[in-house]
Length: 384
Image (tube, rainbow, N blue to C red; front, side):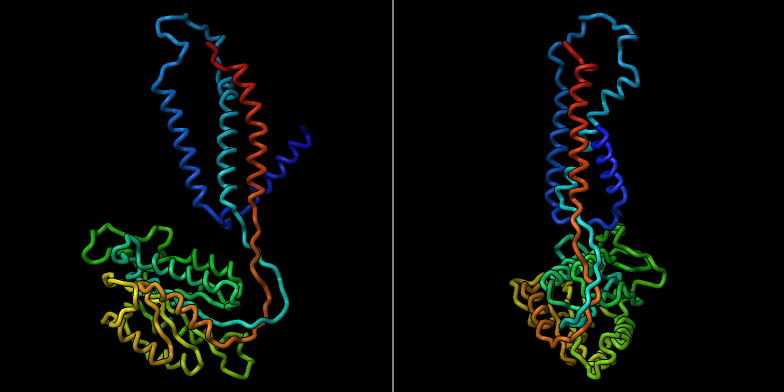
């Protein structure tokens, strides 16, 4: 018993010492389905007990049970505790089935060939509006496309930095080669950085498509100032220590994720990128009405969108429409065709599975809870 309690205490301290905010899950969808199944079974059991009478019970029979023979507060608590342990064990087991893990970083020495890129993500107010016919915000559609693109680029040794922009640009993190770490940086980034989350014109005033935890409220934000963002991107490329001493201008890229509803066309900034051998690409969140078919549209929408697309193409880049089924694949191929740059690898992200911490705690609770439940039922249970 002493060894068992020591084991249980160690596992509990290990679990309590885990930073819950850093936990990721490999397959949380299965856990959701199982949780709903367990909740349904519990609900049906409660309804059965509530709606049916006990087999050996009659309202008019029996006699008053003296208080000294009834379960007191402590007796009632001891009777319920095993059931609580069983419920907690099932909950922890469900978490373990989602395959939780943490990302750790380990130091690695050496050089590798990499493609250098900055991902510049639009978080302006228009991105918080609905993507037509989806029930989702443009930002959510953009994030899903961006994450899918990153999955395609996994293990391609991309060295990437993440920037967000609205009225002003914000660097989330400097260049990294860790696919796992960068993936979660993108996934956790806000959808919108705005002064106020205003509803789209023509929709109910209280209708929003972005969850509260994906919105950052900053007084000076809300517009789509791509010029200021690209100026910061150019400076960031110029400060990149991995290419400062190379003596040449390696091929690099900037990937712009936006609905292209920009305030001004950044022609000068694209010229500065071209002078540095940096090619602009755009994942275009096409918020126009859906078109028939999956082919790339022959006539992109007007407004500043068309001018932005023409300018990107003028400087050797291209755009990839998310309504086009092959758009992300073409973006992948365009970046994959770029020449590589040799950079020094200093660290990488490592996936550390932690499901045994939850599984062992669940098993320990079951080992205690099931025998305790039998004992509690024998001693304090109801008998006919």
